[in-house]
Length: 481
Image 1 (cartoon, rainbow, N blue to C red):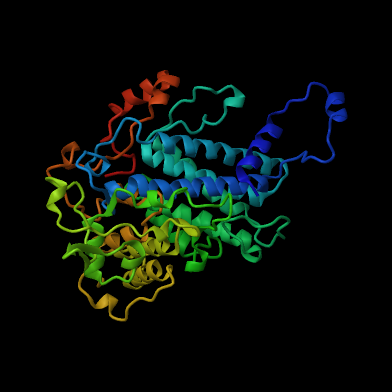
Image 2 (cartoon, rainbow, N blue to C red):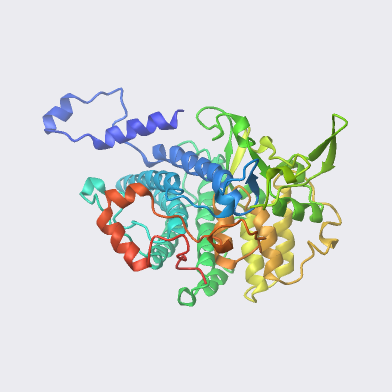
């Protein structure tokens, strides 16, 4: 099934306006699809948003979060916090495009009175919109994607109001699911098990709700911790992800059109090396994920490769490239080859949420949830956790948020921009700095608004920038400390 072709057809069908009732009647083709059921829109949204997140994690997030570095290169680059004016334009355009499709799906679900698909559409919309606002801060949201209603220059909304709507929408979505309803159509590419289909989506909805509550938990007025505890203590009303098998991960099969976002697999590794911060901790952990993420470093001695284990390049290094007398660990391109996976929200992330609540005194079993979260992050790759893994000081639970967030950092690897979002919320894990970093060595808080928006929606752009104090990369998110 070609999702992009379907989408063109869908847009065409929804756009046609009849001139007269008689014209429509006489020009109806009985062999063509006359009504669009909301399920028709589902797969393109899932694939495009998930694959975009996977690609941008690699191209953007992983550099400023010190998972990999551009090498060889002494130019500034985003690993040195050199954010161009248009760094976020691709994500801006992609998320708005598919938010519009999620809104269309929501409208169609309401038309046909299918509450389950309405709940799914809400979940997709909130998932993508949350990523969008957490990249830029205030964004056009409530009036966005409504060009057909004449709203061509939507106003920017502040994050506080956007997040409040997220919480209301996800609460409503959870209440809409009828998990006992029979599935009339094939399941989608995200949840292929028709037997537990609606329940899987409901668990995604509530797990996303927990992610966003935690994101906003620094704002006391939200009451996030009380709400999260109430949800986790009521699994009947609020079921959440309960195993690796229930993780929200898109299986990219390699069968067109569900293919890896890297059309040339060599691009995944070209001019990139693993960063020292990312590699060195895994080495200290004696972590079994190392060969999954990276290749071994080596030196050339007597015209032969001599492997020296896993060794990266410091992010934003000082001095020339020639200072490194070894070929650093590269990215393992098996992570990008067909078939591959695009993580969206995993069981490990859910467990790390529980572990953080435990560390902060809101839930019991902080150590248990921490260990189970780490195990989940490892075993999702179908590898075993070493028997002595938690005996090492670098891994052993010590009751600190620092230890939880360091392991969560690895659990969120390749999950769109989630490492960056969590760093902005907590300042963890503590990332090393060098004199070569720009922006005074301070991690940027946001992307500038795209150049196109500054001209196409100039009045609203200038208004929100005036309220923010400038279109500056250091303007904090509403939920940041």
